[in-house]
Length: 218
Length: 232
Image (cartoon, rainbow over all chains, first blue to last red):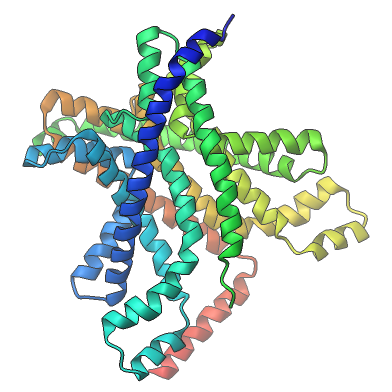
């Protein structure tokens, strides 16, 4: 018998614990990415000398380099400068910053999609900049961003497996640890794959539905 | 910095392996994309269902799980893959599943009149796809394909986790022997960045090369330039 059912049942609770860590990373990471991404997008749009080009380059650079190498950098390089965090925190920050670069691009297109008349009206009413952004532009821009946020959430859920390489004990790392200590990889890895699928497939269906509902009306 | 210079030949070899993995899995990705994407569109259920399941499974689980499964779990069925083979297979199938959706989307969004005209002219379905539908869909596919390829390139770094000695793997090796973490990781970050930048340049060139109506596009650009001059 290739598939050992008793073994699979016995390791399932451990895998569920790993899954819970994966979910925590995903939710915290998405939150960080959504906030940082908005921050980057607004900074780029404001065209502040020196700062905006630096942010732009940072965003492009993060998008052009692998998550794994970024994680290694944060995990091995930062402690050399006295900044050391535990693996979980490092993982959340790395994946959050990584995705913020993608989110910044999504927000940018959202901001660009706001009709020019809205800006002109805000100027005509002599609204201060903070209120123009906070009350007029961003609420309209963010609306189109909601489904994309869902897509990135699902992608991050799957990508967080990469963080197992910097010793974050999430689903993938748990499956691997079970495999190497029992010399049986088939059951834990298959179950891990099924758990990933069991969450990401319904979630992507849901996001598709959201996409249709939040589609811009104009 | 001297660790980077001292170990430059090793890093260079790693870079070549990265490029090899990227090219091989990129080719596999394209084949898988068209095979699965076209099968998904087929009206035969025994073609479209397996393709749909393949696409959803490979998009729904993470690449790392797939790679580890091919490398660690497949031996239980008596199949032991070489690390490079497992890596290329996993990357090609995973990114291929994403690209299959691109193929499907691009073809499904072609104007219906094209298909109808083909039918009116008595073209067989295969000829219809090969001569009319696919060539028309290529420009729409190129930008998302570019994104998939950049993704694929970045994901080659994960291959280091199944012991393929590419750039990230070498960097880790050098790091553990010299301890010069910062210089080495910054070097490979820049290397990856340059590679993905070159890839975006290549896609941009292909997009211009395959634009549906190049002359109209050129005329449009010329006109907008003139308008800018006029405004100034």
